[in-house]
Length: 484
Image 1: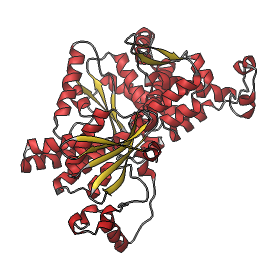
Image 2: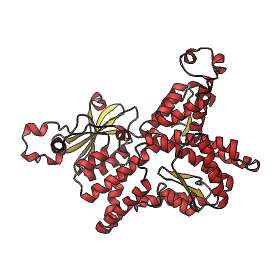
Image 3: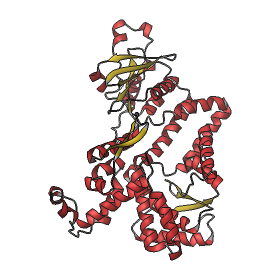
Image 4: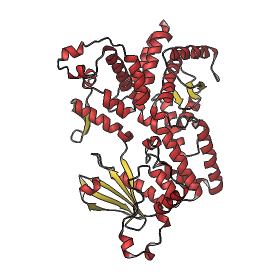
């Protein structure tokens, strides 16, 4: 139990037994008590005690420290998806907050262990990040801090260019001989120089793959002309990006699940009469919503409670869905009692997109008085845009799909027969932020070392953005071609 005082150690044992009695199952959980400075340091490192040196961690620490000192923010809990699971408690918190955090952590621990989208994550990530830090420091000693940091900046700016679903794809094994042939075919840097190629070959399209590749980082690791240390750093950034990806895919579910269980355990078993008001105050603060922001704790816990209530009353299936009498639907109760079983099933197999798509119903939307909003340039304010259920759900799903990031693929590694890299933006209704696209293309150029092209749509017109290493240009293409 690490450095917990006797009172908290006893509380921890009791809360763990309560959590297991509800059916929660988690890895061994180790709680550490830290002061606010150390906790901010660990939080700046993404929850890990050791990371490679980079200025972004210092910037994050400075922001967290100022937020705490000015009373603008405070870290109540932090837990790491690891085996054993590590969680951190703030020393200055009162006992009721420590107990709330412990109950919340056990909810997260159960989710980490059993949710499908975490099943491929590294369960020894604390050791892995320490190993990564050691390797990066070795390169700093060898090549200099400025050079390594500059390359890290480039890699970290692209850490969202991965394919989180690829870890669940089982690919067919191929022979070593076939693999060598494929590598020779796929790597455009093995091709003859353009000046020695025939004109007909120069103009042909080089297809390195049958389908566009979404995992751009992996493609660059495999095919970009990098030095060994650069390739290793890019692999480090990619591995850590895949570790954190499920947290972005399940933020609503994960926080909702942990909040559901801390609420149930605290109110049914843990609280003493003198702690009720303080607990209610802090719990309501956690679930409070603020203008312009979706609170994952609030939407998550309410959806889990709604699912439990519906499956306890049988408010699902053909008969319920086809019922047109709103009064009858409101009073529907078949006393099926399957609510607890259902929420455990949901916790196991869903991610946020699936969760909202299936269980965010019109009745739920009306009950919680939800609406969508948009920025009005005339009034320079955000205003209510729609209270229509279909609009609200569509905007919510859109914000969650691909973690709110654009879909970018590698389309051709030898564009125009000149080893130019052609990327493709799968347009889903919203244009790219052009300045962000330019900055990303510049960083990809630093790795690919040849011109970078990006097919997209701007104002419903097909465009190819081009960066040749010196300047940005663009050219128009047919809109239908950009969509393919």
